[in-house]
Amino acid sequence: MRTPSFIRPFTEDEQDQIQAGLRSSLSAQAKSLAEPKWVHSKRAVAEPNDLLFSKQLAERICAYFKCSYEPRQVIPEKVA
Image 1: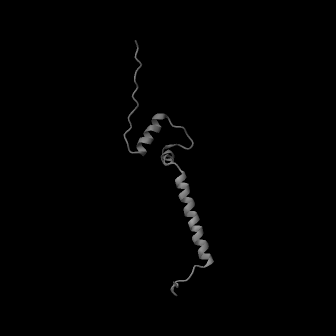
Image 2: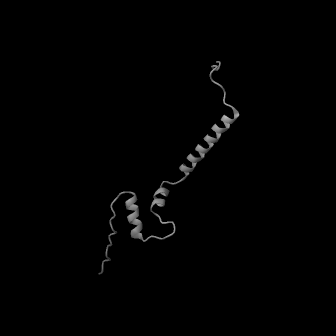
Image 3: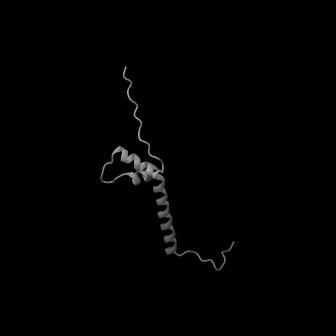
């Protein structure tokens, strides 16, 4: 089968650009697949230079995931 006359083969520069684009898109996909899903939420709620109290962290997590914060329920020890 002959190639139509209006279709020309890619030049070397065009081939290099296509290959470079494929390499960059494939490497970006590989990085996104390698990154765990919880990393996004961790980055959204964590303080880079500071520690958070457990209540602050729980409130931020609930705000990020759009759920209501309910304080922990403490069960008193049974005293016999």
